[in-house]
Image 1 (cartoon, rainbow, N blue to C red):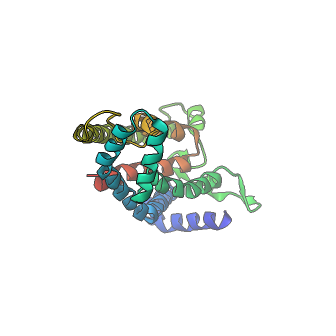
Image 2: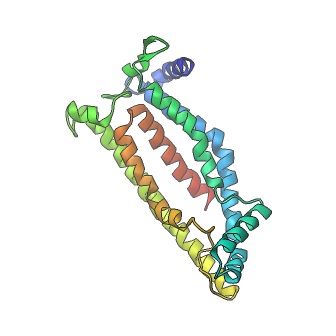
Image 3: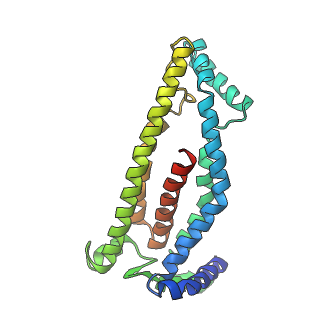
Amino acid sequence: MSVFAHLVEQLADLLEPLFHACAAAAAAIVLFTALVRLLVHPLSRAAARGGRARAALQPRIAELRRRHAKNPEKLRQAVLELHAEEKVSPLSGLLPSLLQLPAFFLLYHLFSNRTIGGAPNGLLDHRLFAAPLGGRWADALADGGVFGAAGVVYLALFAVVAAVATFNYRRTKQMAAADATAGAGATAGAGGGGGADGQLPGLGAVGKVAPFMSFLTLFTVAVMPLAAALYMVTSTAWSAVERAVLYR
């Protein structure tokens, strides 16, 4: 972790002429997040291709639903076999998020520890304007309140997260509606019956919850160190733009 802390410090020093001391470390975190997202972008593109492949399978899944309408277990097995035959994973979209977790947790621990390698953690002295990168929203509320110097930084982050979450919510609902329409058409073409969503059995509940997941970022920003919150906000905004491009 000390090596990573040194890298963040060096990156902040390089960016200081552009962002000054009040935001150089924060800019380094944003840049680090962008680099992580660039590394997993090929997987995001693969996930998008997988999504289109799953959509193309809907007519065949609809036929399986018609054929196994009275046997849910057989339907589940048949759908799994179809995905395996076509080399399509219904969970491929989760891989880019999972691969980011080590970077996120490393950053979280880096700005949560008072010492690194037995020495004081100098990164905790860095700020985003008036808000310490190692502080939390509760600290900002205790030092000036909601509209204090540090509190305003969090209000700006909350506004960005709310805007991105609203965009994601509307887009996810639109995509779900389009998938449902395609699934209904496929089922009708297959003779009807057995449900119309064309999803892998058991994932229906996930699809209903998915539009609201982005709003959970508001909670995470409120309870984690500001540095980790910056990672989350940057990554969430990147995801929104990336999905809009890949799934257009």
